[in-house]
Image (cartoon, rainbow, N blue to C red):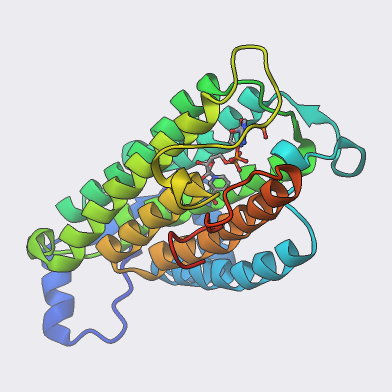
Length: 295
Ligand SMILES: NC(=O)c1ccc[n+]([C@@H]2O[C@H](COP(=O)([O-])OP(=O)(O)OC[C@H]3O[C@@H](n4cnc5c(N)ncnc54)[C@H](OP(=O)(O)O)[C@@H]3O)[C@@H](O)[C@H]2O)c1
């Protein structure tokens, strides 16, 4: 199998630090497409991940502005005339989210991640907890979900490939966390926030699901949990999750992902809030769109 040894980015290191890194064998190998990308751009993996993160930040601005003009066209806003043929909701969710799970697993199993830190491995495991739920549980519990037009399906698929690689490669190949990070307040608070957000997200998605009896496809006013305060409780939970992840990782790739998700699903919460106010005369007037009591 073709392999390329890529030495970690040693720019800015003192000679002693370089020696230490060499002692710890902080080298890693990539195969296949990873080699081609690095060779094409003559970059270290670390540099590639930084560029990818910066590009995701730039895309966040674009997504934020674009979603001012149009609503993400899936679910209640699905439009198969404009955005292509519809894919069954369960199938679309399963396929589009799968790369976020499988690409980090591929990197862990089929590339040399022996130089990764314990912290990096725990953080990628945390990321995979979310995507295991999103890929293997969430889609199969959906009730009466709409079809997903092919355009938003492909966009979500590309995003999950891109982000799965970016987070996985950073945590398994590039990052150099030491064990003391486990007791750093940023790691502890970040992980606590991640799991708090995960619980809110899963609970809120289950509230929405249970609004429908089997076979129903219509919409009702969600009640209970964080829905008593905001229209986008599931989105709020997910944003808290990725905020916690970004704090725990304290890295550019995780911050970029958090900002991108906030721009994307924050706007979706706004759209749903306006939609509820228009559709239901008795919609609770004190309920906010995304952030309890504030916004
Ligand atoms: N990280 C990211 O960038 C990102 C991006 C997108 C989504 N997500 C996550 O993926 C999950 C689903 O997102 P989504 O945009 O599909 O959420 P959503 O629009 O709230 O819909 C979720 C499910 O609940 C149903 N539903 C929603 N409101 C309902 C109501 N009032 N009455 C009855 N059923 C209702 C929907 O049915 P219909 O399909 O029929 O509308 C759909 O099956 C969320 O947890 C979200 O945080 C994450």
